[in-house]
Image (cartoon, rainbow, N blue to C red):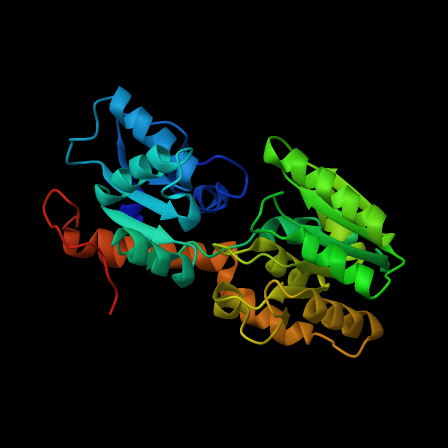
Length: 345
């Protein structure tokens, strides 16, 4: 098969948010036939771009009685596996259902080798690293709106209010160095346990005299403005499938400190700053050194390191995957005619 023939096929992408739809939109711009969050009679390949998207896809396939039809190829994008949830009463059935869907799909692709290692370790399922992208096109499209923003005495963290994000480490570290600027946490949501974490963070900020502001569900442009304005972005999370803030920080030219966990080394190597996981003192030392100018990022090198993970480059990689593996020699490798899932040597 060649790309001209591939463009005649219909792809149904199931996406929960703007980030998950990046590859679908890029393919559509290149002339591919893309359906978002729905099937049509001509659909040949379905792609679930995240765990909830996978459940939505599965439900739609059940509704249309498509699960046993040979022509539909299922590809699922695996994000991460919070292993501490697997045997808890609240999450056990949810993840067991997800596991069953993955076991019966044709291809598993993932954000990182780190997350796929967990998938293999806990569920015995193999996958292929593929959708390791960040929203570079959205950043580039907004560059005129942020390029002249000056740095302020501001530190930023980005992420959900969840136990693995560990923003309390940043607050305590800022207390250690007696930071007098503003500390901002940008989060996509604040409900359930998130409200408890918010209360806890405000108590810590009061204790250490930190000027804390929490921003919930802001626009991507406003996030980029705050990121550009900040001297430093710090995300001390100890568990991550990929972690977009480090990519976004580098792309806009803001220093970044991460917990030294495998997934960050996988993508950034030594081009960002690291602190020991769950170590307030080490984070405090690194923050102080970045603020004083003692630690500086080589942004040309750091940006070059993540260029392979732009939407454009990952889309190229996905097209190659489809041509060379899914439609290799006109034979569809699926659970219906070949049991071996794709595993590149």
